[in-house]
Image (tube, rainbow, N blue to C red; front, side, top):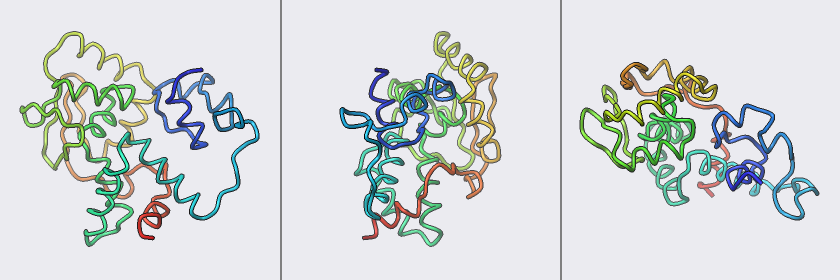
Amino acid sequence: MLGPKCRICRREGTKLFLKGDRCYTTKCEIVKRKYPPGIHGQKGYPKMTGYGIQLREKQKIKRFYNISERQLKNYFNKAKKKTGNTEIDLIRMLETRLDSVVFNAGFGTSRYGVRQMINHGHVTVNKRKVSIPSFKVRVNNVIALKSNTKLTKKVQEALTGSVASKERRERCVPWLLIDETKPEIKVIKLPGAEDLPKDFNTKLVVEFYSR
């Protein structure tokens, strides 16, 4: 038993990369046990209705970004009020959260660790301490870590030795300027549709909340 994070991936039937580099190895629990958790799990995944498929996709996004039901619903309502594509706007708002930006820049191996870093006041935006993971970053914001020997060493290890961190950085290069030596992040533009993760069928989530 590797803990609840692995159970979450097994419940959703797909990798959500909640355990960083472990998810890229044969130790990944969903590779070893391709069935849901629980005593009836080995019977396999049940056949789902249209509503069930929408629900699972909504749950997948919520768990991937580690946010509550209320938060996701609020993001959807804000995206719906915008004039652009609701699906793109929803994911863009989730990607421009402070914890998502720091995580995607490779400054931590897990979203949970990055959130703890922010909660403890180790992250600054434009040289001001921000301890709210859901803080919305904007173009030209400069995100940095407070000077802390132990923390800096941990971040450098994630930047240089983590396969997961490298993959995330490569995807975010077009809209984030990442200086690994300081370490520091500058938001040079908002992510376009091509820069957003393709791990979800956001259309199903929009349909779920539009019922």
